[in-house]
Image 1 (cartoon, rainbow, N blue to C red):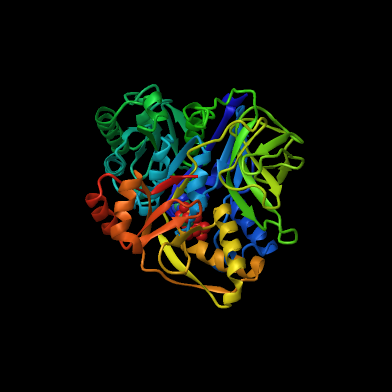
Image 2 (image 1 turned 90 degrees about the vertical axis):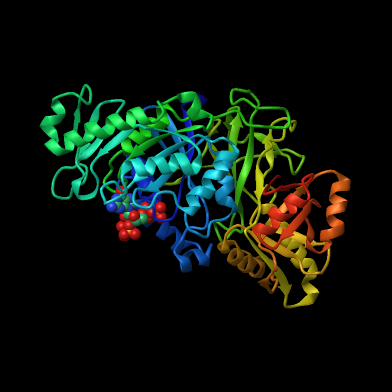
Length: 520
Ligand code: G4P
């Protein structure tokens, strides 16, 4: 049954329309009934739980969640990645648990910084990407300009799958190249109300009956150029992450959303084999295996429990099954796993590769853990990402050093922060990829560990894991001891003052690798 799973995420810059698109995908899948419920439910949930007060204060969702819906026999698992600028490592790691991604671009703004960052993470694992150019109902840049930008900025082959007939005030509809389907706005609201016609080709005279003369001429001219100027759709190139099909649409008006779902069902890969210590594990393997890509604390503030999110990689999981977490070494029975349906958290009786299961626990499951029946495999490739914000942690009460160390160890194992122990000096340095994680850190230090600490600026801009021979490392350390640290696992790290510093050192020490990611 694994062939009918599509596990994917949406990557975008804030405001490009991810929430709106999510909502429309769920609507199409029948998972919610009224547009607006995604946001409304988010607010209700925030009101119920004090995890996190920050969520309320900032009005954003700190934590990713999983939404599942079904359509035409396909089960779609949509993993949400926080879209705010203050995103965290969770955002990155969630992308290690998907088989494909939709990249949403605002038609007027093109590729923005966060889209690019998330794209790079997808590229690390060759995750295939479908591009959705959103908001064609508004004035945007010319379709060609956006497509060229995707091709140039991301070094991808691009294949337009549909074409907008005009944009903004001149928008007359969307023409789907594969099906010859033209969907058009109707009524005053211009909202999509099912005005669809199908045409045998772009030359069909039937197009002239439903478009203005200018619109039809424009569509034919642009479509011809587009089809001649860009790659043809090639499933293998797409699945290798070398080509992206591009869909134009409007999430708000529900244009191009059906086409998008159809594309995920038809082209996006079913669960892919996952890299492990034993080579790639095929989803069709009998043994139940999976890995934890995210741990969320305090979902229920009354119970201080945690939910570990596991991506199932092979086998059929049944409730009550005993699996061994690699970090623990002894089997645990998983009695109350959770499947995250859009409406409710539902208890899972069984799950297939590609599905995500929430496992309640009290801190025994860590990000990066493999769970398996025989405890004979470890999934690899779940990376740490170089932090972009570094801070020194300063204790107000120096007698709490032990508690602080325990807290930092726990929180870094959980994946909330990374911690670095400088070779010189006594203050530990913590690193995060998003500002918000700093607030989460301080509030959890206080609430869970009763540690009163504050953060102060560190003279570093980023960190790089050093990989090389002992002699190369020793030579580097003899010059740069003051900027060296060890991470939680004792791995040597270069604390860099700037991106320029990284480049400079790399040039001076070609025999060392300055890595921006590290496998856990
Ligand atoms: P995000 O999750 O990526 O941050 O974006 P979100 O969906 O919240 O959309 C950001 C804004 O863009 C929203 O407007 C939303 O209504 C609008 N939007 C999304 N898709 C489209 C589209 O296809 N066409 C047009 N014209 N607008 C779109 P807002 O005014 O900030 O919020 P709201 O008050 O409408 O919720």
